[in-house]
Image (cartoon, rainbow, N blue to C red; front, side, top):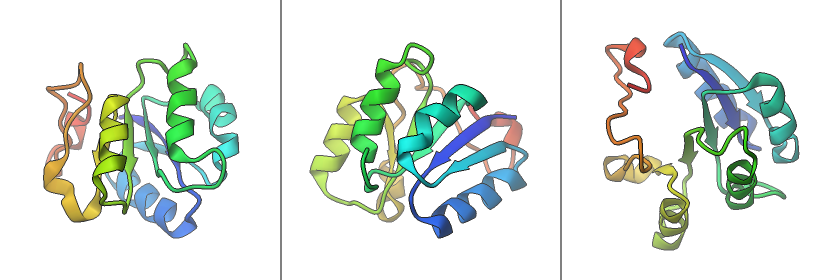
Length: 130
């Protein structure tokens, strides 16, 4: 199963994501302070990041850039989960080749370049990241 690092300052959100992903057998680590994300990532070495955009410094946009600048995480998929529905946020995330999931617009989810065949299947958790 995948090792997933969840980064969000909202404890309720991270608790929910952690519970759901754990149900499917994934190993989750939660960071509620974005300033600690890189440090924890270097310890955990996750297969995928799940992060929010709207956090105290560094915000999700900056954290995304920091992760891409780190050779250890340059190719690690990043799922951006946000309540933001504005086009600018999705354009910036897409330009950084990340996957953006907006709860109100989940049908518009696209995979980052190089991950076109990825899938998350409710009925087959082993299919995560295929």
